[in-house]
Length: 176
Figure 1 (cartoon, rainbow, N blue to C red):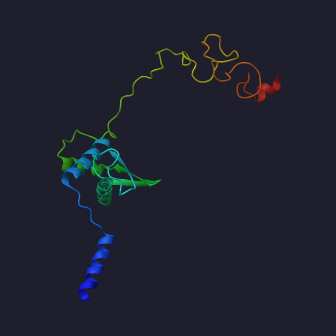
Figure 2 (figure 1 turned 30 degrees about the horizontal axis):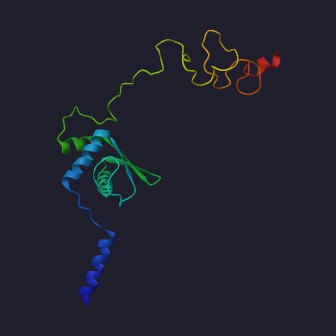
Figure 3 (figure 1 turned 180 degrees about the vertical axis):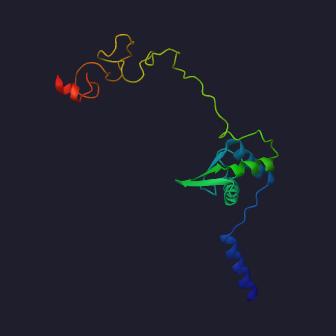
């Protein structure tokens, strides 16, 4: 009888605190991804067979991130059934040590990205030149020097009702 009670207690304990054993290669893949990106997003779904970004089970990602968060290497935000983890400075040092990386290697969140020139810009000072994107290229006279677009939007010229009236209202409109 005592042996049956002990067996029932151990089953209940196993049900509530199931230990997840994570293979080394999965742990290493998760740590490499976290260090490379600096952040990781994980759905709150322990039954999901694979994580969205890494080829490991989702529960492995959840448990590794939970462990790193409890040690202070990640910060955690939970929103709309998704876990968001951000790498801290202590976490960067820890992962460099674990993954045997040199000091000059940094996560993408810390490296400065070079912004490319906007594709629509031709380098000149005329912002609205081209295909007529946005307001200002349609009806009315706003500025004769700027080219007109394809008539999308009301434009800024002419007097009338609504957003595209001739003057901006206020005291100047009241004096007329």
